[in-house]
Length: 468
Image (tube, rainbow, N blue to C red; front, top):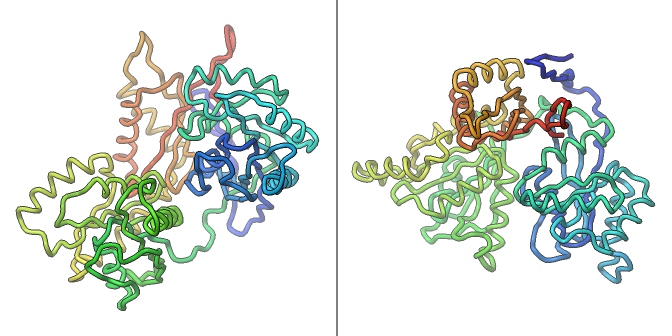
C-alpha cells in the first residue's frame, strides 16, 4: 500500500506478523586491501563500535559476521582482513578468508582509499572479484570533504561502475551507500520486533567508587559484587539477574572508568574495553554520578559513550544521603551547565547505601526503554511536521530557504528519522526540529538520530529526487 504526502509517495509494506517465516538473511562482504577502513565502515553500517579498529594493517584477520538492519530490513555484514595478491604465511590465510567471504556473499563492498586512489593491489583485487561473478559496490572511503569526493570519480577506471564516496569515520554518504546495498541485495527478511525477549539488559556505568556495586548488591539482596572504598575494585563486568519493581532485569556491573581508553594501560585498558562492550550489549545504561562531588570531565566522557552507542539513558545521582542544602544548590547549577546537551535523560536522586528512592529505578528504566522503542506512524509524523514547518519555516540563506518535503522513521532502538528536503538544513534548524519532536512525542530517556537527505537535481529540465 502507499501514502501520498504532497507529491512524495511512500511505499509501505505490511508488517511481518510474529512467527511469519522470514527466510535467511542476505550477506554483504566488506573486502579491500589492508588499512582502507573496512572495519570502520562495518561499524558505521551496524551502527555500533563492535569491529576492532586500529590505524595499523592486519588488526582484522578472520571473517567476522555482524547483524545489521536498514529501513526495517535485516542482513548480515561480514568484516574481512586485508586482501593482498601473492600473500605469504599469515597474510595468505587472511586473504583466503576474505576470498571465502566473497564466495558466500550476496553482495560485495569493495573498499578503496579515496585519498590514495587505486593501487596495483586494488587492481589485482578487482580481477579476483570479477572471477567471483558477485555483484560489487565500489566504496571510496575516507572521502571526508567535497574535494576528495571529486577526486574519487577517478575510481571509475577500476571498471566496477560508479564509486560511492563515503566517510566511514564521520558517516558522510553512508545513507546513500546503505540504500544502494538494499537495492543490490536479494529480498531481505522483515524485522519482527514483537518476538519474545529475555530480561532487559542494563549496564551500570560510572567512574570509580560512585556506588555501582553497592547498587547491584542492594537489588540482588546479597554480595554479588565486591564493594570496597578503594576505587577500581571491579575490573570485569559482572552479570546478575535481579528483580527490580516486580520484573527480572539483567544488570551488568562494570569497571569504573578513570581515563580515556586510549590513555589507559594494562588491566585498566582492557577493563575499559570490556566496559565499552557492556554498554554496546546493553539496551539501557544507568550512569551513576556521585552527587556529593562535582560532575567531572570523566563523567561527561561516560555519558558521551552511552549517547554515541545509541542506548537509552538513566542518570542516577547516588549517595544522596551525603548531600546537604548547599550542595544541592551547586549541583543544580552543575546540572544546568554540564548536562544541558542531554536534557532528555531521565534523572534520579538515590542512595544505594540507605535504599532511598531505589524503587524509582524500575519505572525510569521502563520509561526510557519505551521511548527507545517508540515508532511514530508515518502519517502522524508528517501531519505534525507539515504544521511545524508552516509555522516556523527554515531561515532564508542566499536568497532561498530549503523546504522539508517529507519525513520517515527509519528505525527504532534508538529512534532514527530521515528528513527529505530541497537542500541542506542549518544545524540550528535541525536541532529545532529535534526539540519540537521531543516536545510532541516525548522520547524521554533516549537519544534520537535525525539525518537529512537533500533532493538531488537531475539537470536542466529534469525532476529532482532524493539522494539514494
